[in-house]
Length: 158
Ligand code: FES
Image (cartoon, rainbow, N blue to C red; front, top):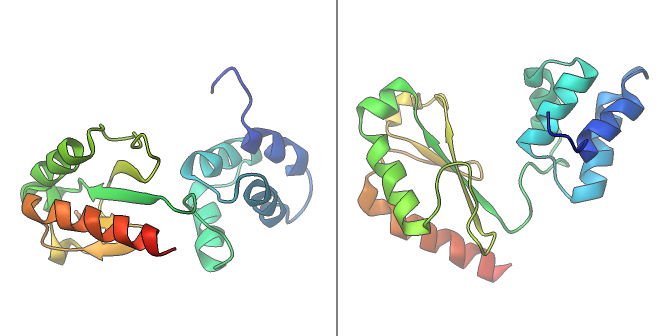
């Protein structure tokens, strides 16, 4: 863990001895930053000794919780076997070159974050990318610029 204790760790320490405290801890994190990101869920899991899958069950069950910062598109490129075999590495390369970032990074304007994920459960559509919960199947590198434009437009409208 980093030397600096994260806000999520502080929240976890406050709630971990109380019963049924996971939802309260998640509410508190969302209250502080407006959303609960993957790293927060990891910190809670570690400090409160709750499996990560259980935390995501709660986060996805309640619509109230937001998993990404408002106004940000999280691009998840599936690197599971089926998607890899169908060439998703080339789609990933195209996202990297268009956005000028590497996986795990965000663009300077904060609009896009690029990450790789393991099998998102729709291998029949391989290769697959997911942007903020919207699935794009049978991806080709040529589709990447249009997808980025689609999300830029979506943020303009809000
Ligand atoms: S391997 Fe990509 S969806 Fe299953």
